[in-house]
Amino acid sequence: GLPDLQRIHGAMRPSYALRLGAQGARADAIKTLHLRSDAVSVFPTSALIRCSFSSMSFCPPLVLEVIARSKAMGREQVLFGVEVPSREGWGERIGADDNFTFVRSPCGRVLLCWWKDDRALAGLL
View 1 (cartoon, rainbow, N blue to C red):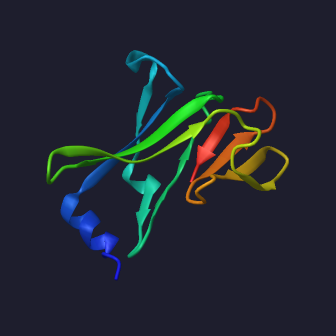
View 2: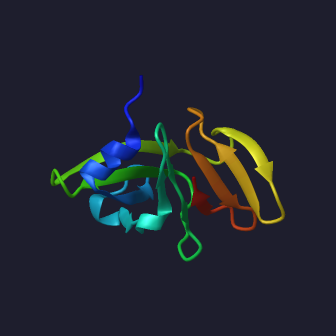
């Protein structure tokens, strides 16, 4: 069976961050955003990471990585990364409202939310 992620999470005591930047950007142009502990919910077989970008503007082409740093092991690891060359043709549009468009990644594991007015990234699940 699958490992119990709640037990692993408890033992490793990770903190999480997002790295965002334009595709091919220099290292000093990539932003690292440290997530609060309430932005992450861990379940026995999955984890949910929530983040919104109301005060910053990120537009394609962009690269987004989710990073975990284990306090117990003193090690950092990229959990997953997403490259978004453009809004059109990337992923599957699964919904919209007056302000946002929701798009599921091609792998089906990441949900991005885009502002309709300026077409910038609004959030991530």
